[in-house]
Image (cartoon, rainbow, N blue to C red; front, top):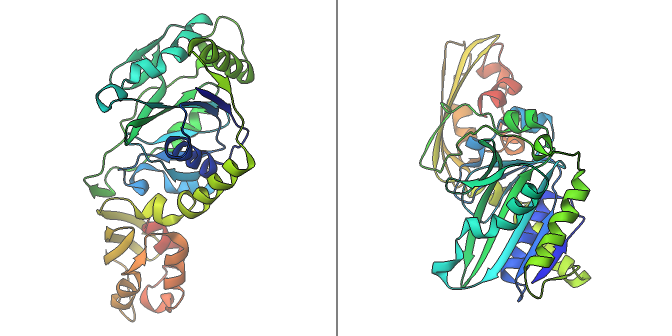
Length: 326
């Protein structure tokens, strides 16, 4: 087994790295890595329905879709992420408890009562410290998870706090759970770097033939290409969302404004606007401008900029319309 710790904190690069070690590395791998502020959504989720859009935008939080299923998770530099890839028969691959056992053992050795509970959670005192997800490619599995070590818990809750009334879809929804940081439960203070080293040492000692490996320049070049062409694109992170209906109403100086959208493959197929506002030119042109446009702020602002918004809505501006669209 190749044991890898890489220094990148770029969420797009790091999520691409998971796919790379699964599909393009011949040997089994164990990898530790950290992301800067990011929300990582499951493959089958409606991205916009999983995030607090205004908070994510204001705090410049990256949003990246991974190739595994499960729910959305928040990453920051106080988290430690782990990935295993392993060859095997399909029936034996998705053993979540097996893959998390080394992590549980290290945390327990530091004096905290970590446990594997439920379908795929690690907990301490009933509070979640890690979620896990998996993706099978041919006869190989990627099993990965995010350990809350010293994360900003407020950011976790705020970034993932969404209004369930906005979206109607069949996508898999995240289930909010009480969370806690591992560092708060240790008998003695331990820095994240020390914890990381202990975990890597334990895996090296546990798996026969395990040895350290550093990505070559050729590895990094291929991961960068995967990052740029897939994981950093709006099409992958948002356009791959299942079909959904969106509804949001806001109060403006010009009155109540309600936006209703039908979205497929990230494209608004139909837009309907309601409210008690006044309009000189009507709203049909605005609805038509929004249709066949990505449900993405830059593209929507571009479409609206072609119209005399002040003629279509009295005392309602483009910023109000954008606020009603997310």
